[in-house]
Image 1 (cartoon, rainbow, N blue to C red):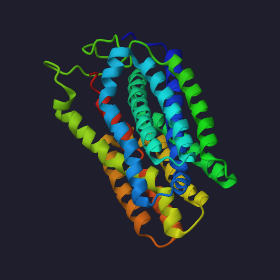
Image 2 (image 1 turned 120 degrees about the vertical axis):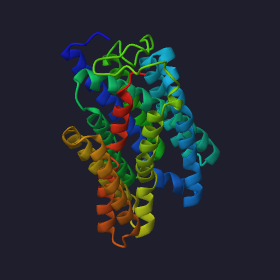
Image 3 (image 1 turned 180 degrees about the vertical axis):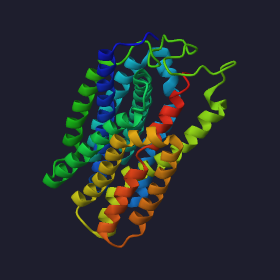
Image 4 (image 1 turned 45 degrees about the vertical axis):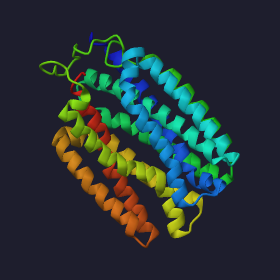
Length: 341
């Protein structure tokens, strides 16, 4: 990979930030209206939990295949297709919810999970290219772009719930904005890096290590498995917040939907701030210390949110929860990106 000039790196960094922000905006738009969707469909919390598994099933099925898709077709076509699928599925899910069709919502959530999952992997690959070109920790700030998107989506979702805008029209507007942003962002990504299908796996980029010996499957690489387990643990905490925080506050404290969305927004804001300013702490104290601290904050935050009888204390728990869930996923991506393959 020929070292890109500074202007190209800056352009690529902006493109990656836009991709992360658009993905966060799309995901949190769905999460922000979960209460409205559940009430429209007439589901109890247990039934809603089963419905949400459709999203997870699509995402989990798609993510392990994303690397092969990128290698075969290239990152830009994959990002474009994933963004288009996610946008179409988001609109479709809104329409199916308005029609009160639970099976249709479930099928479209599978498609939405596939789109967001592939989009997630491809934009992280693009981010590792930019991070190595910068030769410094940058991944948390890219993920801060995702968090900014989720915060904006939470605020917009609260406003739309307050004025009573139907979910379908809300989702349609967001889908159009996110798709347009994706189409613009992919044009400025770096060429010749891991995002490109034509790049040989054996050619390490700047700052990357070439692993000795014959290349094994990633599933047989102990470092990959351990990084995956670590990311799984904290992503579980992050995903639980997106799925249940707003609904839990509404049901637990008998407050309006907009207040529940504000609770989710507190979590997302704390996560965003930590990702923006956490890069300096990571560079100073190292990844292991940052990950240990993240786990502690997440534990305290989840317990405070779940067990507190007071709304204010639960919101404080949401903030600590957001701090704890902020850094582990991006640091896991950086750790995996240390090896070019």
